[in-house]
Image (cartoon, rainbow, N blue to C red):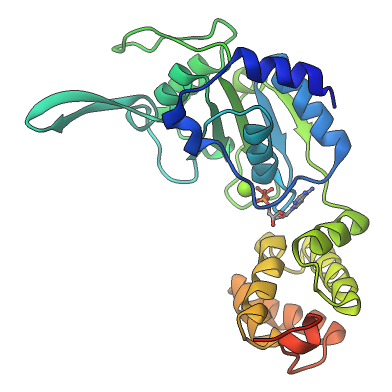
Amino acid sequence: MNYKIIEKFVNENPIDDRLKGRIARPKFTYIGEDVLNKAISAFLSGKNILLVGSKSTGKNVLAENLSQIFNRPMRNVSFHVNIDSQVLIGSDTLANGNVVFRDGPVTSACKCGGLLVLDEINMARNEAMAVLHSILDYRRIIDIPGNDLIEIHPATRFIATMNYNYEGTRELNEALLSRFVIIDMPTISAKDLNKLLKDNYPKLKKEIKDQLVKLFFDIKTKADSGEISDSAIDLRGIFDSLDLVKAGLKLDEAFQMCLVNKVFDPYEKTLIRDVIQARFKENLSGGDVFEDYDF
Ligand SMILES: Nc1ncnc2c1ncn2[C@@H]1O[C@H](COP(=O)(O)OP(=O)(O)O)[C@@H](O)[C@H]1O
Ligand SMILES: [Mg+2]
């Protein structure tokens, strides 16, 4: 990682005090040097970055880490919900009886040199396409019929994410795709997942940690082979389970809430319950999962 160049970028692009609260404070440090280096180079060279990968490959965590590394206020637009150009650009609203223009996430990010995350961009509807084409253009001007021209602050960056293998996934059209450099997000390795668990739960017992890593890959294998749906691959679900156990719940109850119940098909539920039962005894509680557990 070239710290000197990053430092120079940060110094040359200071941000207003009132925006400092929007700089991400990621709960997780992204683990994976190769991907991080690629992302940093792309960011420094002003490219739009498209992160492509299945669920739980750390796409949003990486974006948050970049916001922090480069000191950029971050906003997130999820294209999963219906987003049109007014939502993105902003619109006139009433404030104290006067009509004022309220910026949307695109205009805000473009004015202050922010980082805009275009989450699940492949779900974007046509109503948003004109805006996306315009903001991702190399001219760095937003030019949308019916709107004023807006210059994009040079430190503004766009990071889009895209899940493939996902129900409802559409391919991006070529014109949009050509505006990005694309990073393939690998699934975290067993070694790195071990590290992630250790960093975030230093008191987690080693035998539990090892089984959790295996559980994640058991579920992933089943999802990759199509036996269960992708929504079951869920690292966050594993972390959430540990949080619940910390707060006093039994491990199997926590797994039920955070992993099993994330699929709705009864047969898939059984499959997940089976892989859990093959790796964990029933009735484990805080003291079985964490060292020095005292609740
Ligand atoms: N390489 C990684 N480094 C750090 N965390 C990761 C990594 N891969 C997955 N995760 C974890 O997976 C979970 C989901 O991350 P998220 O960024 O929301 O994934 P995505 O957006 O790809 O679905 C988080 O708990 C995150 O810590
Ligand atoms: Mg995501």
